[in-house]
Each structure stands twice: as structure tokens, then as C-alpha cells.
Image 1 (tube, rainbow, N blue to C red):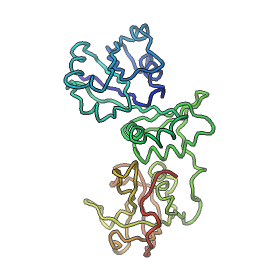
Image 2: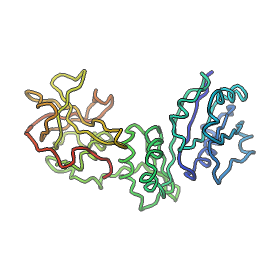
Image 3: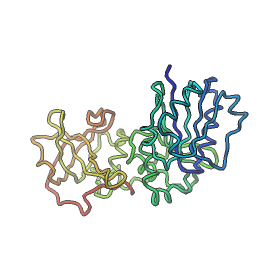
Image 4: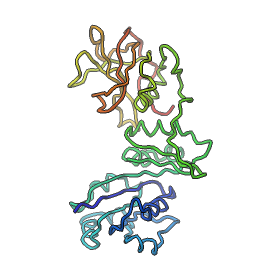
Length: 314
């Protein structure tokens, strides 16, 4: 019988214990399963033993990263025979450590939830980027808590999507309300223009917003600077129009872009070009999901931009 594993990660005092207590006591999540709660760091808030008892949950603390070595997790499974496993993870251990640890064969990863304290996010992202980015890159759900009216939600949403464009991102405000942080008003270009002019510094914003809101661009025209790339298994009469981007750090440079249907021939590969194209919201085989397809109207040579890499920090 498979035992689903839920991992909640985040920096100390990001609200993991409170969040996991709510998970355990949520009737929609718990149905009395025998649950093993593995706690990998000690915060100010502790679990209520009576709450755990009523939820059929046993708590085990791991004091250091070495406590996961060898057969430690296998032994815990053998001792407690859990039907479900919850792990309050120490983000400074990095999730790859947990991935590599020997685990029972019946443990099946169900979800990774990353909690972020909005009051310290920018400080940690600046000074501890490796650890902060780890949870963002791996998370299925990214939850910002302690948000207020001054929280730059759209900016932070774009930063997270640059590292993980499949994550669900939620912002929890101090008044208890929840929102997804999507805003049309703060785009750095005029989506009503014809064509929409995408400046070099805004290419990353355009890429992420069009991925998330393809309908916003459907039927419109855009003009942007980029390169033409060929890829394997490309649809007929298509190339990839895009740029190289740094999503997290120097080691994470990769390509971003969209399929473009050309009129007569593919532009010289990797030459800088100006592309004016009509946009069609459609299924994109390049991304394996709904996105946008560009339909060439005009291509002309372009000078390389002052900064050839795209950065997702605007």
C-alpha cells in the first residue's frame, strides 16, 4: 500500500508548524490515516500532543541532516507503519538531500509546499538565494504569508514563475484573505498597443505573462527582439523565437521562447532579429500546454541588445 508523502519546506518562522497543524486537523485532508510527522527543525511554535493524538499522528524529530542517513527513514516506516507521511523540512538542508536519502519503496511523493514569510522574502532571496530558490524551484504550491497592501505580489510572482513556471502561487494577507497576485495594471508595456512593443528588459515579463495568460495576447500583434532557434521534432514551418535567460543563478541559464510559424524561410539561426508577429492562443507542443504561437508578419535584422541575457527581476 502506497503512503503519500507531503513535504512542507521554508525558512525558520515561515509558518510551517501552524500550516501543518491545519493540514492534520482539516477534515477534508485527514480521514484518520495513521500519520508519521517528521520534524526537521525546532521552531518557536510546537505541535500540541493532544491534537496529534486525536489526528492519529506520531511525531518524530530529526535533529540534524545526518539523522536521515543510512536506513533511518526505512526504520521509521518499519516502526510506525504510516499510511501517510508529513515532513516539516529544514530548507537549509536542501531538498536534494531528502531525495537522495534511502526511503521505503511504498513512500510516494504527493506534494511539496513551500512557505515564504513576505516580511523577509527579499532579504533572504538576496543573501541566501540558493536556499530560498530550492523550495521555489521544487514546490508544487508556493504560499506567501504575512502579506499586506505594500507587498509587490506581481513582481514576486514573476520571480517565482521564472524559477518554476508550473507552481501554483498564493498570497495570504494579514487580514486572512487569499489571492493569486495576478495584476494586469503593472505590465511594463501597453497591451492595447498595435503592435505591443516589447523592450529588451521586458522580454522576461512578456514570456511569463503570455505563458500564464495566453488569452490576453490572442489576436494581437507584438514586436520584439530575439533569436531564431531550431529544435528537434519541430512542427513544420516553425522555429523557436526567444532569448537565453538566467532563472536563478549562473548555472541555470537556459532558453525561453515561443514557436513561430515563418512565411518563407527560417532566419539565420541565432542571429538577432526584430520579429513582428500576430499572436494565437493555442496548445504549444514546445511547452506541452496552452500557451501562444507567433505567426510571422515581418522579420528584419537587429543589433544585439545591451544585455543579451534575460533576468527575471523586473
